[in-house]
Image 1 (tube, rainbow, N blue to C red):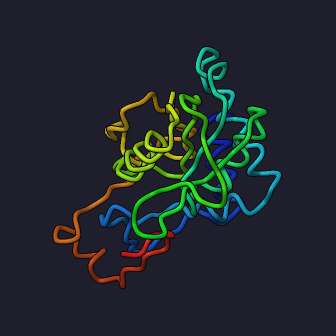
Image 2: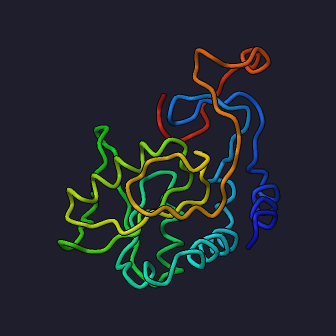
Length: 193
C-alpha cells in the first residue's frame, strides 16, 4: 500500500476529522485521525496490519515472538498485527495510570516483542509501554504504528516502523492560532485529559 491508498482507507472510514482537538500528549491540532473508525471494519484493519507487516525488515520479522499493544488505541491493530505475523497478541492496560499486563497475560523472560500503537505523536506512551514490557520480562525489538504524527522526531528507543507519516501541525495549548482558539476543543482519544 502506498500513502495515497492508506489515506483512502482513512477517508473511506470517515476517520480524518477536522476541528480543534486535544491530543493524548496535551498538544492541540486542527486535524485528528480517529484510528478506531478506520479499524472498525475488520477487513480494512486486516489490510492495514498486513501492509505494516510487509514494511518490517525480514530480520526483525523473524525475531518477533509476540505482539504487545497498549489498550485502548493499540488493541485492534495489535491483534491484527499478531494475525498478520502469525503470533499471539497481548495488550497492556493502565488501571492505576501505569501500564501493566492483566487478565492472566504474561511474557516469557527475554521474549521478543513487537510493540504496536495506533498513533505516535511524542512517543511518550510508547516509551511507557516499552518500559512496562521490560518490567514484565519482554524485550521490545521494534515498534510499529498505523500513523507517525511526530515528523520522525519521536524518541522511542527502538526501531520504529509506521505505516504512514503525517505532517499535521500541533500546538502547545498556550500557543494555538486564533482560528483554532475560536473553536471548542474536544478530546477524541481514549486517555483522559
